[in-house]
Amino acid sequence: MVAVHSGVPTRSPSGSGQLQLGDAEVDRLFRALADATRRDILVQTCNGDLSVSALARRYPMSLTAVQKHVAVLESAGLVRRDRRGRESIVKTRPDTLATARAVLDALEVQWRDRLERFGEALAPEQQDADQPAADQQGAQP
Amino acid sequence: MVAVHSGVPTRSPSGSGQLQLGDAEVDRLFRALADATRRDILVQTCNGDLSVSALARRYPMSLTAVQKHVAVLESAGLVRRDRRGRESIVKTRPDTLATARAVLDALEVQWRDRLERFGEALAPEQQDADQPAADQQGAQP
DNA sequence: TTATTCTACAACCATATGGTTGCAGTTCAC
DNA sequence: GTGAACTGCAACCATATGGTTGTAGAATAA
Image (cartoon, rainbow over all chains, first blue to last red):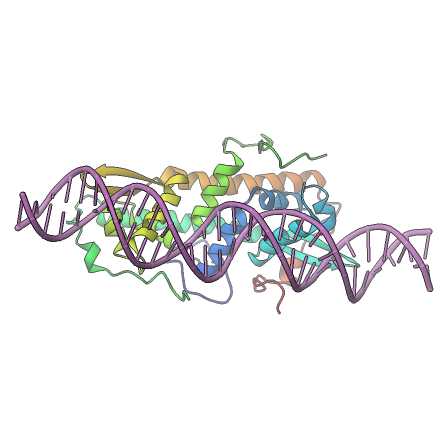
């Protein structure tokens, strides 16, 4: 379970592997990454020298569309915007990308762990009715 | 310059770029991962001993909803379904999860590469201490 | 055989997403 | 000061998503 629904998506400082991201944060993170334009924006803005409109000139879409993409990345914590005069400078936050990798690592750890526990012995799958699950849904509306 | 977007991704083979995923595939991959239920399904089905309906009993939603989640995971290549009699057994494909990690790695490589080429002209970045990762929600209303 | 289980799929609904245009407010250049 | 550039936001549209119910067919159990 990756979900503790903490307010702050803090990575574990020492590489123990357990991170404390809420489901909603992880959802936003992967959803932000699930768009080619946004992934490209991440690469383009690593220097932190591009404003939103300078960014927008690089893509065949309107400024507003790029603004929305940046907003999605920002709400996922993948970029930050700093106001510089009349323009807002977009800059990637590499630490959050590392967080995404850590989530994938955690996923792999989880099923590797599961494989070890249930591995070969594998009792008949009465796990189905036994565990009504629902611990991962958290605070769904 | 930088005629990105609009075509094949063709990441620059700088360094260790070695995967050949199209934008659409990567989109599907991350989108499939951007849902807590689907991430949990990935963990639940690592043993390959759960049918779709057995899986559905673990979540507070209809069988059809779980079917759709499995379909999303399958189209992303994250799970496989094997027909066993009247039931279809869902099993995760760890290699595709590793592919997702490789995509993130490639992203990091890309901007690290970019930083190397363009970097150092900017001021050193100590701004992470300036604004910690707490402001995930974007602009507060 | 019959009844149950499991899957597949269609139809529907509410909301989210990704795009557009238009307008208003700042900040800068001249 | 005037105008241009940059941003922010609202309204709108088309489509995708995530959920529901209902129906139908195939495989298994009794």
